[in-house]
Length: 386
Ligand SMILES: Cc1ncc(COP(=O)(O)O)c(C=O)c1O
Image 1 (cartoon, rainbow, N blue to C red):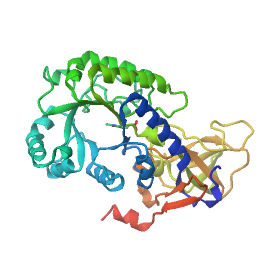
Image 2 (cartoon, rainbow, N blue to C red):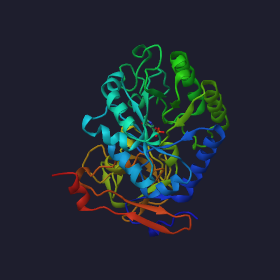
Image 3 (cartoon, helix red, strand yellow):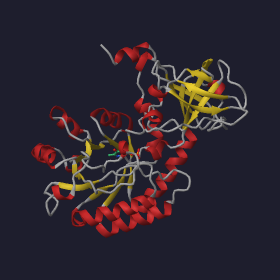
Image 4 (cartoon, rainbow, N blue to C red):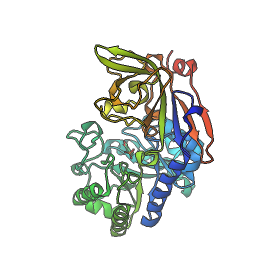
């Protein structure tokens, strides 16, 4: 059954449990068939009330900060795979004690921390030791938007081949790269060719290879058979454990942001509906990427003769609007406007800019009941300030 929107407070992110399970089943089948591990990247999907479901299928999670590590430890009960562009000295031992894998972004960082790592590993049982890797930059990416392309000239993310010695330095067991963003397996195939051309002999020495995120295997039309073949060939050729760490693919098309109309006005001839949500504060990727989000039941592009509106966010930022969209009926105060695919990279990026409340978070359960997980108020706004 579809979500009964009458039960949802506005504004609210609503995760559809059945859709998340469907994604996880597909991802699980890929990891089983390919003989690899697929872990969830918290930067894209940190909805911890759904972590028990995620853990039914995925063996782990990846973090890019101590806070994400703690969320993984607390709500999944496992150590994290960790990568940060630079580690902070004061939290390094805590990061180690909460992680199973640690990836360094530069040889400087490796040199700085390798003795502390060795001391830590010598102090714990073998099953609690941390396995370390280095992030490399294969200097090949098909990501069109520079904002999301870690291979732009001068990128700080990952080590180019000339910065690494002929063989993998002692103590480093893994190679990590992340160069994809909402890409398919054919992009991965071309990326692996570039990686192998530059780092081939190091791959033979590695124990594990982490292929980062950006593998949008839950998008309709993605050829998972091709992905599985590619992963098996790679794993066997280099005799390595392979890890993928997608974020988007987990939460892809698993839920919505429900909002409602507060006012309808005419702005110099343009009809505008002001909503109780904000593009800037609650859907920042729509302005940053940018992209025009789909609205359930609305026409994505203006249709002549249909009621057409620009949708305004509730902050005073002039650019906090999106449009235009057409509807079958004129919008009036209280009407619902439901944005599709608003689970990944939304909740993790919200702000309380302008003092606007964060949307509530809820789950439309598989038994067709609604569970309101959390609502926010003044305290959440105040908490970020002093
Ligand atoms: C190092 C790393 N791993 C994984 C991911 C997750 O990528 P995606 O959500 O596109 O799958 C990202 C995203 O930026 C990343 O930087």
